[in-house]
Amino acid sequence: MTGLSTLLAGISYPSCVMNASGAWSGTHQELRELAASATGAVVIKTTTTQARVEDVKGCGIENPGQSYYLAVLAELRATGKPIVGSVAGFTTAVQIGSALMKEGPGVFARIEQELRAERTTHATDA
Ligand SMILES: Cc1cc2nc3c(=O)[nH]c(=O)nc-3n(C[C@H](O)[C@H](O)[C@H](O)COP(=O)(O)O)c2cc1C
Image (cartoon, rainbow, N blue to C red):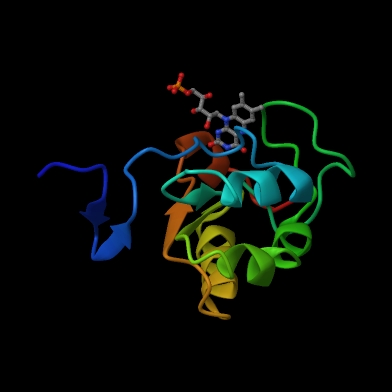
């Protein structure tokens, strides 16, 4: 019997079909709707330590900051679906620190880090 469930890096996903980061996952409302859908995981929009915008609009690194997404995590987690975080920073240290901060509450199944070269050559996070 075949199915859509899968195991990735030791994490069990009820379905291998899930959203891309930021695709219907930028606002609390979108995340709630996503979590209530048949998605195999909730992949949150990429966040930086500090907010870069107040309101999420479309594609890009502009985001309301980690605290905005941390505020809705417990609610998302209650659905039982794996939650996948995506963090960005302008130094590797900030990226790792951000990932650890998110893992602290033990709510993330996996941390996806943005390790693009152009983001590691800048001296400061924003
Ligand atoms: C509205 C919107 C927001 C997005 N935000 C992010 C983001 O925060 N982080 C990220 O890595 N990709 C972001 N993306 C890119 C998507 O994750 C995905 O890579 C892109 O849509 C290409 O998907 P495809 O390869 O299935 O066509 C965003 C895309 C859209 C449409």
